Length: 130
Image 1 (tube, rainbow, N blue to C red):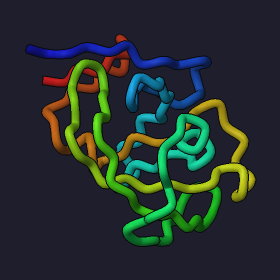
Image 2 (cartoon, rainbow, N blue to C red):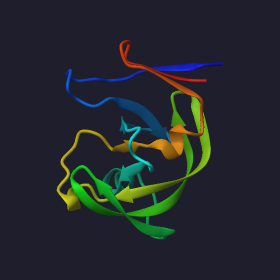
Image 3 (tube, helix red, strand yellow):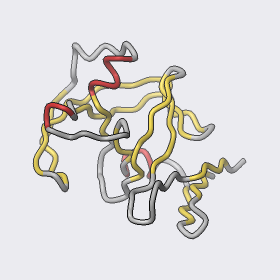
């Protein structure tokens, strides 16, 4: 059954955001089809009690704001719309440490988007996951 989520767009020239959940904590993520990996703000994860003490690896990413270094972790119980991802590898970055002041908690990249059949309806501001 298809799941539909409205994409949030604060103003005409802003980015689309989607609501995701981790263990009942909501996170607003930028829908970024140009990003190869999803990245979540370390500060958000620390606040909700996620243990970041044992990263799997670290990697440099080139972003619109420059090069950042992110650590990879395994995450369980991640939900986008009503679609669960049982286990994902995701990257974390200290947004504040890199001078990023945002009103979102990360980016949703192709690593997760490619796992599902999706339809982006830009005129209607909707994301459909099939």
